[in-house]
Length: 205
Ligand SMILES: [Fe+2]
Image (cartoon, rainbow, N blue to C red):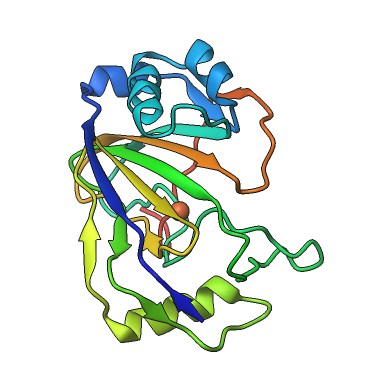
């Protein structure tokens, strides 16, 4: 199957201080209207920009504020796609041409900036039980051209566009905003007060 990279830098920029990232409410599966009303200034900046590209859309917004140490990932590491429905029995993503949502992404921070594949990828086989793991290993071997997002820029992409979270290289605050449309989710409109990090470090310290 061919996966065309559809990453677009909208050149619209959200600006934030570390204090603003720390203070921003975190939204879990919020509708666009609910997120605008219940989010903070950063969420509203991003939504105003988003509406210049998607003036009449509704979907789901997720935001996260992370305090990261070097080596920590703000999401599960590895190449993956967003906006894919999943098989109910296995929870694994469905790769068919007509079922892929679209998204707008903005990440702010000095590191842990999302990396995107920017060339078309051909993958013909994948594991039915560990789909992303098997694809991620193949993409790592292909060494495709990639682009790391610029802090604060709002990017558009879709469910064919491979990307991965990167580990932090600093002690830093990192803000994440993603608006998704047509990915099969319905809003649940929750504010979250905790966020997890991921690490490949073994053992204690
Ligand atoms: Fe993702």
